[in-house]
Amino acid sequence: MNIHSIFFKLNVLFLLALLTAVLAGWLTAMHIIKRNQTDLLLKSRLILREYRHQFRIPESLIHELGLVRVAPSRVDALLHIFQQNIRRHRIKPLHVGGAHVFPARTYTYLLLRTKRIKLLLRQRESFWAQLRAPLSIFGGLLGFLLLIYWLLRRALLPIRRLQQDIIRYGEGQCPEAEIFSQYQDEIAEVGNAFYASAHQTRRLIQSRQLFVRNIFHELNTPVTKGKILAELVEDPKTQSMLDSIFSRLASLLKELAQMEQITSQDTRLSLKPVRILDVIDQARDLLYLDEPIPTDATDEVIEADFATMALAFKNLIDNARKYGTDLFIHVGENTLEFRSKGAPLPRPLATYIEPFAQGENSQSDGFGLGLYIVDQIARKHHLVLHYHHDGHHNIFSLKKS
Image (cartoon, rainbow, N blue to C red; front, side):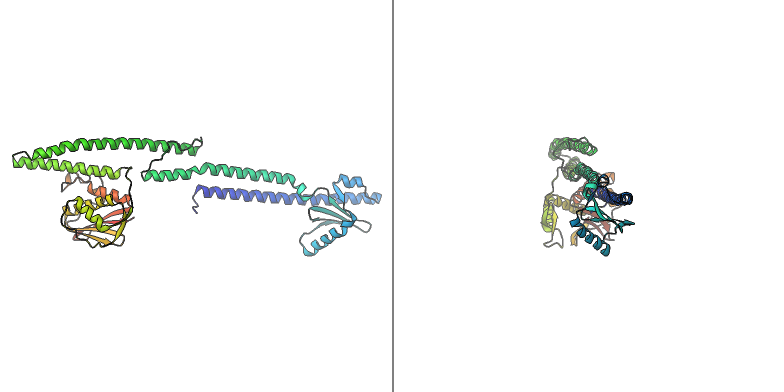
């Protein structure tokens, strides 16, 4: 249970309000019962005073005081209950002189017992009749609280849907509808603003992807033609220079295409168990390598998207071959290490996982996109790319985050 949740706070607030209402209702009921008992004692004084003057009790006075004589046949049974309550101390009766007030069943009774008189009266209205108005108020208040709770919870429930859509949007899934809610409250306004922004961003991303892909297509053709024409140049020095230029352009286009594909929100990973050896073999095929890559991997499997993970392996292998020797892939517990002998990186890893990070300090024909693409693929697989140098080897590792 999340104690910081709005729903948790709403439930606690409603529970406290409900307990407060119940306590207030109970105290009100006890006050009404106590007041009625006190009123009965005051009425008993009037009755006893009238009896002292007239030596009788007029029925009109009993009626005016809201009392009813108890039938003689029931007096003994009610007095028996009265005596039991006194002995068991379940209900302590109120008494003043010869007047005793005690509840029995659903009524409050007044017992007048002196040397000359023994009379049992009861209130005309029962407990529930006396509490009708307070119970109605309490029921209305309880219904009002329940209605407010239901309305608030109903208004807040869309937050969970909005939260799930935001999470899915972060994973690259755009909400299907462009309107979150037809209501006019603040939550609906926030949701509608997010949905509108998400779809606007979606359209911008699609436009960017179309633009970038068209650029790749348009540039790839002249680069290919340029490499072919470079072969026709007779001057070896000029031929070598042109071949180098067009090769670097082709490499750049290829890396840009990979970056666009991996960073695109449309990318859908098909995660499933794959053998590490199969991923290594696929990476070797992407590099057009004939010789096997040394590794201690056997039948270990990882949960990954085969195509994108092979691309990450390919970039790590290519990076190790360019900047070092004696590449070896080690499979450890929850980690994959790409080891190669070589000098340590002159700068922190964070500078190398930025696109075009190498800049003019590049030592190869790469453009600083290889490790950036590896880092992006690792993030999509909930992995973290690490680097350290142990004195002889550069070690790039993929570990679970």
